[in-house]
Image (cartoon, rainbow, N blue to C red; front, side, top):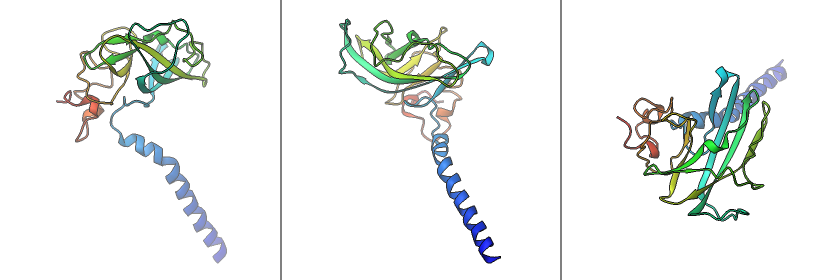
Length: 197
C-alpha cells in the first residue's frame, strides 16, 4: 500500500511539473499587454471565418543582402516574417506589407523582387506556413514598424515596439490605444507611449 501511495504522489508531482513547464510560455505571453510587439503572432480573418491567416514579423533592420536585378533608390531594409494558414486555404497578400517610420512614411514591401529568401506568395493549405524575408526600399526616415494594410484608413495588423511611435493613422480594431490592452498596465508598451488617455 505504501509503495502505491508514494508512486501516486510522485506521479502527481511529475504531472504538476510538466504542466508548469508547458504553461510557462503562455503565462509569459499573457503577461505582455502589447499585442503588436515584433514577433507577436497576429491573425487576419476573412470570408466570415472560413479563412484565417496568421502573420508574425520580427527583426526589422538594415539589410546587407544584395537583390539580383534590383538597385534600391534608398537603403535596403528587411524583416523576417512567417505566414500560416490557420483555417482554410489562404494566399498571402504580400504587397499589403509596409515598413512605417515614426513620421508616418510608408515603404511598400518589394513584392515584385523575386529572391529565394523571401516569403513565398504561394497558396497555403490549412496548417502550412511560409517563412522568409520582407524587403523595403527606404528612401526617407528609418522605419520602426511594419503594418499589414488591407484597405481602409487603419492597418489590419501592426508590429512595432522598438520605440515610441506617435501614430499618424488610426489603429486596427482591437488595438485601439484609447481602450486597448497596451494602455491597461502601469506602463504602456514603448510604441504606445503618449497615445494612452
